Image 1 (tube, each protein chain N blue to C red):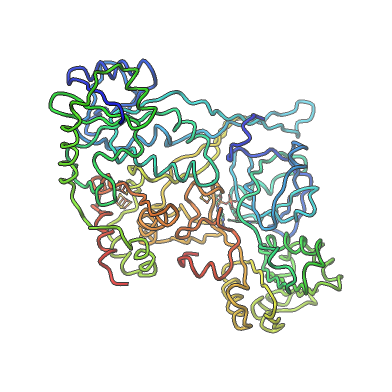
Image 2: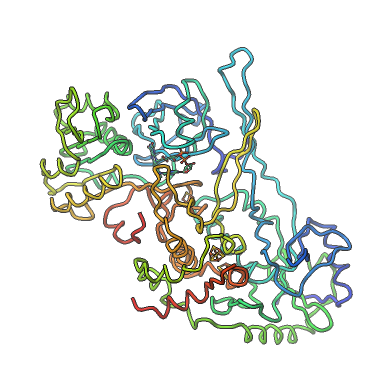
Length: 349
Length: 279
Ligand SMILES: Cc1cc2nc3c(=O)[nH]c(=O)nc-3n(C[C@H](O)[C@H](O)[C@H](O)COP(=O)(O)OP(=O)(O)OC[C@H]3O[C@@H](n4cnc5c(N)ncnc54)[C@H](O)[C@@H]3O)c2cc1C
Ligand code: SF4
Ligand code: SF4
Ligand code: FES
């Protein structure tokens, strides 16, 4: 049985402060109307009462990441001769994320299959992933838009987390999921929490029951989506409101596409990868001017298709959407991916 | 260079040893990896591609169009189309580039043994075919008849003129060249590739067709091939999609659940019919 611990309510801040001495710590912090993951600073007010607006994906997959530096060295004897030097940095600091939600932790599992397990390994992702411990807060109540239970996950899903933390009236019940989580529990030297296990499980179950269910099951959804591939009318109707702003993908804990570009100043430069999104027209635009996805309907179809058909087809039925509901809460024109999936399931064809 | 050779994003440094002007907007670059040990060990299969970088400008995808049977250098042919390709066109012999290769899948040359091979290429589309043609010519006895139909807009737009001359002179290769319209000094065929294909009407019996060219040429070539009774399994082509990582991670080059950089660029028509229509 996994080890557990308990933190009385008043002690949470001091426990987190103690953790921050061991590793670089990211915690959810309120900034204006937003809750964002920020490096921990003593005395900061943390926000655990609602999921962060942006998931902590940038901790492991930064929005903009240097792949390597290059230096073009001119030979002073022969100015036409340039030597190139490349330098990569694969040293990453030990890091702990505290207070993300199970859906956010699940997001990293969805990345893992692509970045670590399916052929080529991404050394930047791998380096950060291995050095990062994820302490997740289970959800006590769903937020508007959440539908994790419909995609086979739940408010206390442990996949992707190292340590699960459940808020109870008197304090926080902690349960280790992995060895990394065990190690943190041990280091903190917390009181045994097993007396609170049952109470925590009850809280988790009632949260799961409160999550809305926009559709009953995902069975046949991958095939249904392929069946609708050429139904231009269906996709145009679903995408009618979309303004191609891309917010849905930037806020999504499971979106992982990127671009690679060079930036140079003088003889030095960097090759950088940055988040990119299939909701933008340039994403697939070729040099010839040909674009396989020129319309927003085709791009929305790809986004939904990737999460609910292409990824599950490649990875044994795993849906690449964890139901966090962010794209639903923050889409400026209320496009709702769970509604689209429900429509797909109801559609003829 | 660093010691982390497992980093798939880190290019190998290479030197351009020769630049060949193929057409007014296509140049071929012969390159050699700077590290002689790596050059010696370098191995690829016909049809695989590379990401070529000009540092400070970026990376673009090109097929390695020299064959693995001739490993003195790697050749890339580049049509000027945008930023990276324009920067490549500025390069002179002796200059440094980056190469990430080999990437992607390749032509199933083993299962093509003993068959009649029909190549149908248009413009720069001869590049991926060239690798396989030269590979097959270097293993000539493994294959039966080899027919090459190659077309371009004008005679100036024909690539690999030296190869064309050699192939035309060989008795064990049938080369048909065509251009779209009359051009001063042209004595070969005139007409679009698919029309010429119908006219020469090669038999589908015991044959495999390999085609590459601009999308519109491919479209009509496929129709012509099917009229000639080539089945979907007998037709191979290569796809182009905007690519970045080249290793199935960045998510840019998908068509449905297939990644052109990893599951392709070589596909049979039968495979293409199984994936969504998003070319
Ligand atoms: C598998 C494969 C093999 C190819 N082989 C050859 C070849 O042998 N010779 C040749 O001349 N061209 C080839 N191309 C096309 C070539 O990659 C593009 O023309 C080139 O990337 C354009 O780059 P650019 O930076 O000059 O254009 P820009 O318009 O400045 O492009 C910006 C970025 O978009 C991407 N991009 C744009 N168009 C394409 C495209 N059609 N395909 C892929 N990426 C694109 C590039 O990554 C580039 O970095 C191939 C493409 C693929 C996918
Ligand atoms: S957030 Fe909404 S409007 Fe913006 S791209 Fe996504 S679906 Fe379209
Ligand atoms: S698609 Fe929407 S609901 Fe699903 S994981 Fe991404 S942001 Fe969350
Ligand atoms: S180029 Fe990145 S996934 Fe194909």
